[in-house]
Amino acid sequence: MNESAERTKVEWREWGADAFEEARAADKPVLLSLSATWCSWCHRMDREAYSNPMVAANVNDSFVPIRVDIDRQPRVRERYNVGGFPSNVFLTPEGETLTGATYLGVDGMRQVVERVRDLWTHKGRDAARVPRSLREDPPAGELSPEIERLVAGQLGEKFDDQFGGWGDSEKFPLARTAEFALKREREQALASLTAVREHLFDDYDGGFFRFAEGRDWTDVHHEKLLSTNAALVRAFAEAYLYTGEAEYREPADRTVEYLTTTLWTGEAFAGSQAPGDEPDAPDDSESEADEPGYYDRPASDREAADPPAVDATAFADWNAMAADALLTLHAYTDDERARTYAERALDHVLDELVADGAITHFRADGRTGETDLLADHAHLLGALTTARQVTGDAASLGAAREVADRALEALRDEDTGAFVDGPRSGPGLLDRPLRPLDGNAELADALIDLAILSGEDRYREAAAEAVAAFAGAADRFGVQVASYATAAARLCREPLVIEVADPAGSDLHRAALRVADHEKVVIPAVGELRDREYEAGTAHVVVDGERAGTASDPAQLSQLVGEATQ
Image (cartoon, rainbow, N blue to C red):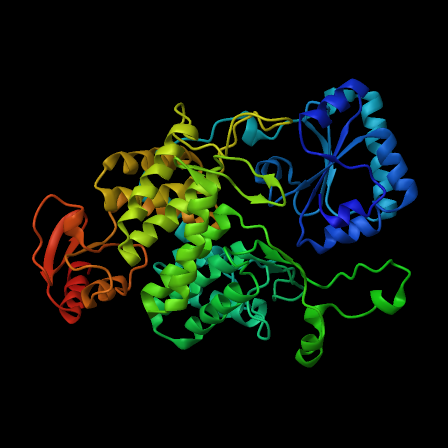
């Protein structure tokens, strides 16, 4: 439990069977508080509502209060998030939802507590509900090019011509959406990344903030998450691949510097850095509470101030995302620092968090996270297939097979073909399978790469079934899940493949990596993976599964790809 929770007057329990058993024995509802170390509004609610003696007394008397860190327990987060953080969710002793709200002040919390007590007294468990995503299978459909077309159409409908980005309210960077748009609506992608660079990038300390509340990118939330920064390093690297312009490379370079300094623990990447704009002083302490937040200060004042705290926890999925992004940047720029730290982060995850393909979410402060989470498998598989393409490391392919095979064994739902988010067990609603669209898309995309790299079509078949499991709702998907359309497109039209006879690092291999198609697959030292001889000094272009020609130097390769993909 974090320090902010410990300073409140609420008697928080840890998430687990014991807390729910206590609630059943006392016939009390559960108050589940979803929080994060980087969440300033969570800390503010702790200081205000949960530290108020009357609120805390009512909570302790009428409920069994449970505090959950959303980064450490993502399965709880995905089942109980009510629209933002903090999420304050009232549950039956069996874990079904009664009601919930995000941030509440003292008066708001008093009112909600009173309403829930009244609801429980008069309706009890009859007032509970279970989210549809936990009650129904996803709507299956046909895997077809129509999926890509439908989501690509959303790009134009949702693009903000005035301010950049997609949507007409709060603005998130949507890195995966930008990558999807780079091949389909490039000007939108570049305009959106430019807006992200102008409004969410920290020009002084480096790194990207999480999002802005305003449509015009105002009211920035200053937390810096490893996941956000990793995704944006990759997106800006891809933009640099297409444009060759420094305005897209520079933010990626500077974010790598931030990741490898501020967020580097010595072994891996830390999970997040707090926003520094919600002082921990009591509300009546004007001397401190009225001071500007760290990121609201001019650079000269920041230099003398203590930087916001870093949560040093190394999460498997986010470190894999960072490794993937840094290897991608190295592929296009030869940045050796990026490659070195990517390999060190991957080594840490493989050595400390993986055993026989099973991945443990984290180990920190004497605690161990869950094993076999979909996000961990999806992102680590993606990082390992990227490592095989960029560095030529044969061990990466072996590790990728183990990670993929474990996901197929432990997470695949045989009835639907989709992947569940983790073990089908645990207190509350954890025993109900959840099939997240974004996690299925990420894993499917990585399985496509693995199928090409390994020559084993069973991985592609699994990817196709996972994507088809959601295809019946493709007409309702928004731009936020563009990664799903990417996977569908790569299944309906085989990606460009460049087989390089020479080892990784050769001129031909480096030229293949820099072909302007970020959805391609590059196989260095291809002879090691195929049962036939390849002439040294050659690269073979495969389009739609058919050999399109052979090149013997970078210029010839570029020309051949251009002609074959017209």
